[in-house]
Length: 638
Image 1 (cartoon, rainbow, N blue to C red):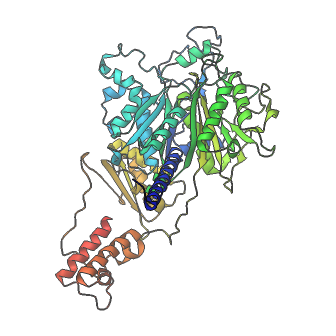
Image 2: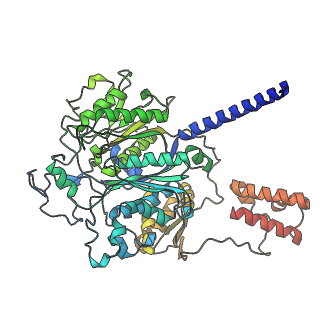
């Protein structure tokens, strides 16, 4: 049996087509495995009263040392401090980086009883609050995300809030176990907000939050989730970190981290929480979410059998940096700055500096060094939240176009050969302006467990923003909509908004932002022609629940959903909605779509009727007024 030439040609064509298909599929898989991950939201709490990324930036820009003496609200022994490091159960430092009001928690907001809230690790409480904030700041309604494939990746270690769940006060019995399991740190967020993507708690000590971020990036690229919350939390409910590290002589005597400094004498134990809302960059663009920055690449590894369980390992640090660069498809010279692990220890800092010099410091000109800094100089070592704090810092630095200075590092460490490469310690702020070169930073975290992590953060791609002719609106009046989970929560939100809105943001801009926030059961609307009028209504309510003449308040049941009801005939008037057509593009587009369909079916134009054009049919006809009213209502609903 012979094969014709035509059959051979067809077989070759089929083979070539299949080869091309496989080539395209291979390219698609490679691109998906390296797709940049967009940071679309950030939220945090750090020492110094920091409650937002913007407040963190203010602290950094002003060069504030946010460490403080031991908190008085934890029930710690009054005689905890002792300058003698050999004393068991004592701390030879009395300073660290502490959060304000870790006991404060709106349990009712999350549907949690007071008893259960009391039994919950403060880290769980903070994660619930900051998760909600991260989504809100991303322009994502947490209430509308129920049932979504959102993942939660949390880095955390035990807080020792309830050291022995088998021995707890009777008033919290039954809740202590779930209130203190590390797995529930991530699981509680997913349960409370109804997320159905992966929920993972990671404990690799100091590198936990960057490892969690790495896992979130991998899960997004693989399609295991469409949105992810990633970060870390540390609350020192017990003084054990101070007493144990005092015995190891690991703490700085004055309670301050001095990264890469000649004065380095140990680290400052601290706490904090930071979370990032992440999406694939393609998804963020498609959904219209604002991109704050981009995670371009990440990697994790282990020290293995090195010179000590908790001792850093320079070669492993070099390997994880090179792996992160490879994951990003970049060279070391493509990175401008490093947010280092930089704890301020005599052993760890020189090892890290040498690894950075060997990787990032080579093949650079002396006038274009890689800049080196550490957030720990400002707030102490936030441990499981340290890495994500560094990411938030660098995203803010990209936005503000400046690298802030590192404190307590005026004289660089003499144990580092700084001449071996082009690395510059940020003892002063350095401008970091957007230009032809894409700006990038590396962020490192190295755990006492031996697990290392490195992440490459990149500036957000520029997006062309359409220019509108003035602010939308007909009368110039703005409405500010505020809601809360309880009456007290509503007053607190009104107070926060009044404080923020007094900073100079345009009232119409504030109004648009508030209109996109989730609407809770207790509600307040304030209307005003200018900032002063709006603020007066807000402040009156915040001060004591008083409702001013330009405000209205009310409550809606927890199960209620907004419903749009189209009224019947009788409310129409000539030229209704004409001003809206000229002021609101969404309304105009909706009316035009309906008008086109009516014209196709009935042969007349709704737009002509609304504008009163000559020859347009009369409002008196029922077959005219009903489609016109329907069209206007659809436009208003949209």
